[in-house]
Length: 182
Image 1 (cartoon, rainbow, N blue to C red):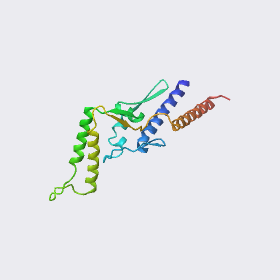
Image 2: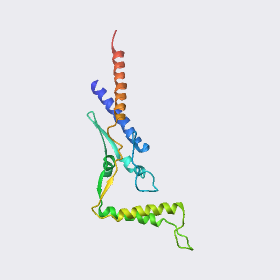
Image 3: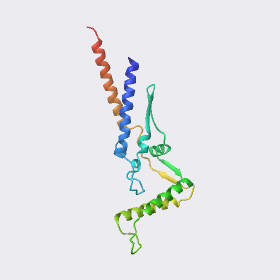
Image 4: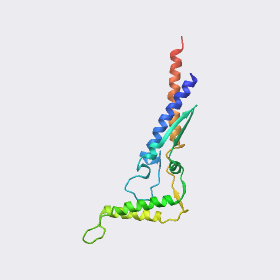
């Protein structure tokens, strides 16, 4: 009975907290602590939700009363904890590719051969300038990644765990009352 009780709590906590951690991506915050805005302007939307790959990569596992969450993507721990990156040659190639992609999207006026003065073009030119600035960094330069925590301890986590334990305790209490003989 005790093992079932512990397994039920562990299972319920795993499901509830997995849902709450997933909701952090919708909230763009770690429960009530908003994530810092990204410095890069990008047409693809919020930094942590652009492709959804990071969000989908988070898996939970429970073994003997312990629950762990993990991701197979190495950059997700950097986002969750914040920290520094060292610019590599591969990163520079990516930055240049993104620069050419943004700059290549700019539409030009056929007669004047100048970039058309449209909102889309101004956005793409700003984006291209940002990618170019990143691409011009030297290999070995340090870049700071702000913390955008989505998994970890928070007072809300304790609150959810307490609710789940209370519900399970009431179920055990009801089970005992039903099985007591007068």
